[in-house]
Length: 325
Image 1 (cartoon, rainbow, N blue to C red):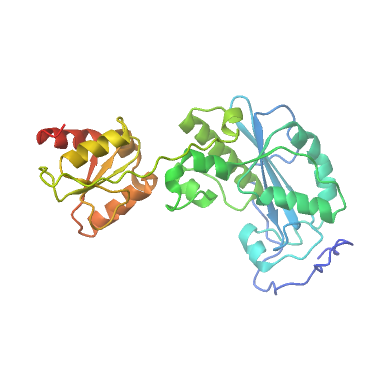
Image 2 (image 1 turned 90 degrees about the horizontal axis):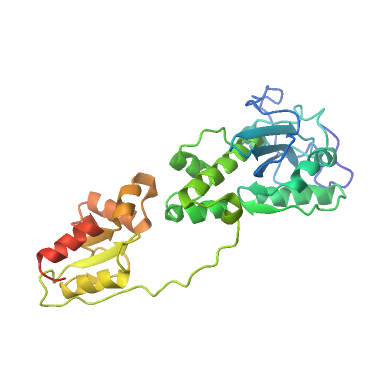
């Protein structure tokens, strides 16, 4: 176990016992370059792994450099954190003290990477990587470099809002939803995954990277529309909820439903008899990509609740069939 950094009060070598862990096991290289990439890239994704619960204990740095043709170059290097290694972290990423015994310390690693990092916009998946880099700078007595960061979690939330409450926007869930191929908890692989998330988001939203990272001005959401149905209408006693993007204004659809006798509500409950989904969303929201309302309606239907899930076109035909348009 390397000696602790002079300013490190954590105490190298302390922590939980490491019995049962092969500290000398070889780690797969995953095909990452071992030389810092050179050239100009659209953006660079960065990921770190740490030796213990201290964010400053960086033991691996991975980069994914996205070329102008969208090909990705990955780079990975081990870093000697000069701190303890916790068994939990070793099991997570497979890096132990023997792997980093001959590796450069963080200060030397940063010196190697800084020319590339300062020239490019950096992407991290969550804010942890920036925090870890800054913490490692401080513990080494270095000035925190002025780097440009964006968060691929924020980008993913913008591209796939329906995943909120439906698995979330972590790499593990995005790997499943987007069918990404990477090995989680290797810094080079996780950096590549963050880069791929951004590429998928660019295609889904039709926005280039520079536009994707601009702050989003949130539009004020209109109040939820709730209407009481016409008690004399042909569909009186029914309750409808709308979700997804409709071709007509939501207020117009709600008015059509209410005139036909349907109560219009904002959320799916046991009283809901109809869920109307935008036609395009009905096609796209399959499985993991359903909206929260759609997901709940499917679960209720599968549990035996009498609820119809239909697209906007089917809803319009239903209303027209009763002459309520």
